[in-house]
Image (cartoon, rainbow over all chains, first blue to last red; front, side, top):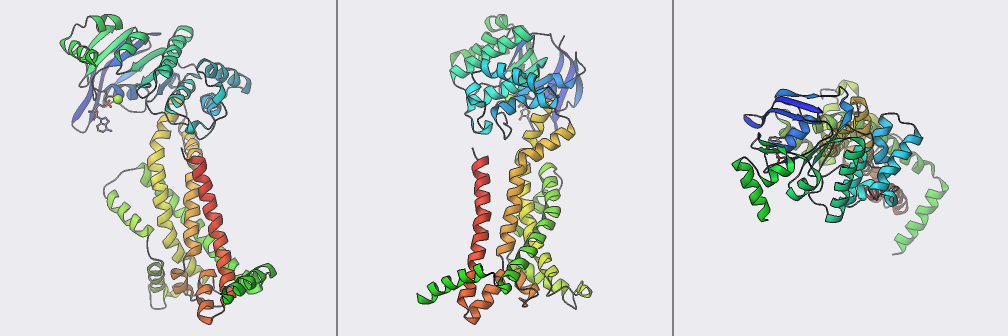
Length: 231
Length: 231
Ligand SMILES: Nc1ncnc2c1ncn2[C@@H]1O[C@H](COP(=O)(O)OP(=O)(O)O)[C@@H](O)[C@H]1O
Ligand SMILES: [Mg+2]
């Protein structure tokens, strides 16, 4: 078990935007979180990554160490320094030796085709490059749980494919658990093996990703998937 | 035309010869403006940071007042400080009018709102993003604070430099509270006014050139910041 939610509520004023019961994320799984806009997907991710706090309930993590959870946003912020230094920043925080740091960041840059950009100013990169640097930076310290909030929403297909490949690789080789908010059902099918469908803050359906996408049990899920597939 | 070209030639001779009076006036200008900017930074930076990171009732009103004061006419700042410091005024016993101290106080009134306003905008925009990045990469509170300062260093410096530009170039405030007394409160801008009425154009041009050079340096610094930071 990577994390467990027995009850999780988030209110904004009188509005309840998240109201979950009993969700378990197993270690090493790749879970897609799908649902309409405003369903509470980002809210859930932000609470899990501790940049937001629940109004009620809590997330129980397998690991006590909060520094093993990380998140990549749709529009990542790049530190005002080089690509390489951005990727190494989490390692500097953890006092990695210079050698280890170089080795790790080189591997990640190579996998994501970033080696040529290593000395560029990170905040001047294109959207796709920025997203790859953000992913490399998040993966640098070998987190046990990686949260992604629509990371490829405005990214070209080639870069999207690179990112998807990297997610599968890191999950396979390092056992990183992945929680992946996406609006792209084909992408969910390519990358994930579990699925959570949220609507209006509630968990509507959860289970095996391929199975739900092919054969949803709930009417709401079915309508959502059908609507999406028409596009 | 002759008056101008002769004035310019004479001006360079004056500057290059290190004319005692001119050097003294430039020195006092720099002293007054540096002092007011340093004090305004001490006052304005914490206020700008607090405004940018906290919300409270009446914040909108406070911000509107600050924005108004960012373009406060210097003569009004000068007049207000003069009235407060005049012999029959509330702080008259300090006997500060017609001293450099009064000039520094008047310039603080002009510069502090500028520094608050610029830093407020910077912090409001960047602090939440940097904070959230720091948390997701495993930085502690102190590390996040360092990260914020590092990420905003250029914007913070730019705010201070802009404040200095305002201070060194204004004439109204220092004229009213300082009185342009020779050898005591005479600064570059008030001296130019005086020289013009006396018809001593070459000295006026000489001081004007120095002011222009200072303005050029300030804007070169700001431009350089923009080049480095801009996308
Ligand atoms: N800071 C906030 N203040 C008030 N309401 C918010 C805030 N953030 C999110 N919400 C509301 O919470 C709901 C869920 O938002 P979010 O988790 O971003 O949805 P999703 O990511 O699924 O599109 C939305 O209705 C949104 O308007
Ligand atoms: Mg969202």
